Length: 310
Image 1 (cartoon, rainbow, N blue to C red):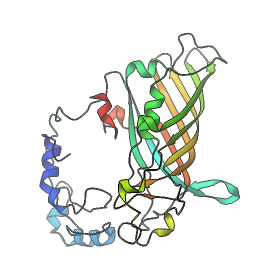
Image 2 (cartoon, rainbow, N blue to C red; image 1 turned 180 degrees about the vertical axis):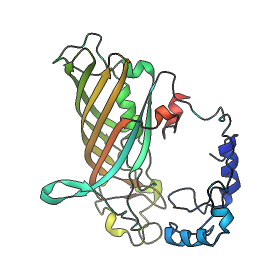
Image 3 (cartoon, rainbow, N blue to C red; image 1 turned 135 degrees about the horizontal axis):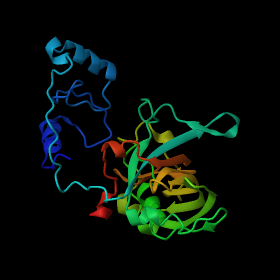
């Protein structure tokens, strides 16, 4: 982002020296780039401390409208833009915990620093041809079919991972071991076509030889104090073994998908190669997709793997 030659890039360049690390740190910053928790906090900023610093600013600086934010202006042409006529999905990657009665429940606290847990977020950009390929030419209730190849494979490799804790390596095409998706026409009316989706997916990364990274450095940062999260299985490797279920609705009048709700749920093992290859203990991971709520308002965030559209 700081390298972007536009108003957003210019703002980030003014505050870039205040960040002690590339990612994974919470900061408190005013609209004009003043850090509220010091410029060298080694871990997440304490919101209470940042609030105290904010209250010490001159009152004129804290009033609504005190900071004048100019027009955004044109975006740097290097920033990826969604395909014309395409469909934008938002993905939420959430670690889940065992709940009462043998079910699963959402995690409330981060396992790393005890701060409130937030899911990882990403986006999927579909071309017009891709999303149109999901609808049969003559949909009839009860029809079952496999969607055309390529689309769900790309979504799986790009998005079925856990970015909520940071530091995870990406999947690549060779890590997709199996993917089965079946779509069913559940209902056809004069107004819409309702589709169901079911399937399964297995992504697996073969364990790297220890010589590639050296032994896991459990005694130093970032693992010190978090040994209980790490796997001691000598055959541990990164994988995601999940089932898929979804419901899609196509609006026949507007000729667009009005609903695209899909969930992947399964067992996941994370991998981090910082200062030695390390693996986490298996845990439940849910990845949910919906039509991006802000897309219609022009809130465009490129997918983490946006290079595929360049």
